Image (cartoon, rainbow, N blue to C red):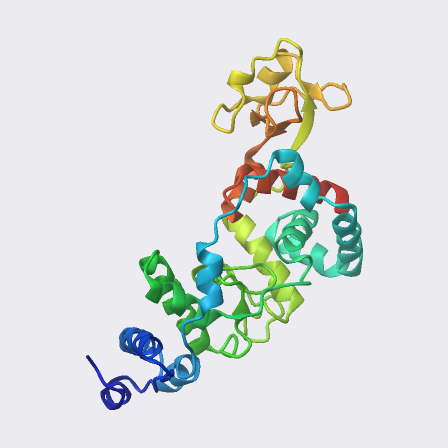
Length: 324
């Protein structure tokens, strides 16, 4: 086992010694893990100064482990999920956010060819329009999860990405705050997503999704654009099904031209006819037969790239229709 002096000599990481045998053993194990992380990161170009600042004072975070292991007591129904997220308050705040940032949103929409109202909806659902972006030290949270081992390889890769981001100077370790699982800033990007998709929209040389609204909203737009957003299509719409509709043909994977669904008697939710277009369309019944029905298009699948949940993508679509 490496001792304190050899850790400092080899990796430049100063261990924290906790009082008590079990706690001290835990601290030693964690510090050995950090030593390996530091060696790997330094081999990939992260400086000793960045490593010392990012890793030198962190410790296993019990709250992170508690949240990661906590299992939900029940699964939300579609109605519960929808009503809890498309609330009157969220819609009203979204309308205000849209109006307050309309010029910026239009500029971002023009550059990335993504609907500004969808950008606002993602912003609203991820962090309540920036109202809560998370207050965990991202490096500490990711190190805790990578060390704990349940999904070690995933979180170690995210930790390495976080260290590279710090090395490039986009944010300081102190400001790199996020969720217990390492999702960061207004868009709640994981570090690897940040590396691929965050943008410097205002041109100040940093990609700041924590404190710069332009960078944060443009990064959401870039994520959707890179995922295949089609600027000339909507995400989908609520529809009315004929009484003869067979629920077994609903589902995201059963895609047909919209005109085929129209021929079966599917209409807009108010009973008006849908356009008989060739665009690929699926029918979703999130609450089961007899509940709400939606016709969803390619952009629905793009939203699912942000979060692979039908409920999530439907709420983003509904919220985007209401905020502007």
